[in-house]
Image 1 (tube, helix red, strand yellow):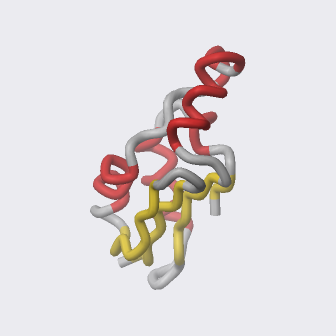
Image 2 (cartoon, one colour; image 1 turned 90 degrees about the vertical axis):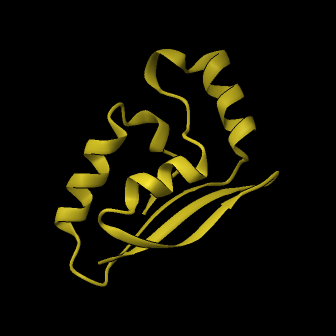
Length: 88
């Protein structure tokens, strides 16, 4: 579980790959934020741009997970952001 921290990982592909290696088959990987993508991006753009990146669109993150995980949750709405899957 990565909660309210994913934009602080500079290389999203590498973190997904490394966590996939660490998880057992059938383990769950989740990226979640208690804010919408647009709200989170606004905060990072205004005050945390030097220590974070833009949160990828949920579909983009799901495609990064797909080689390692069966993505079964993808929510990006006005209140939250969640992408989650089970390790293949």
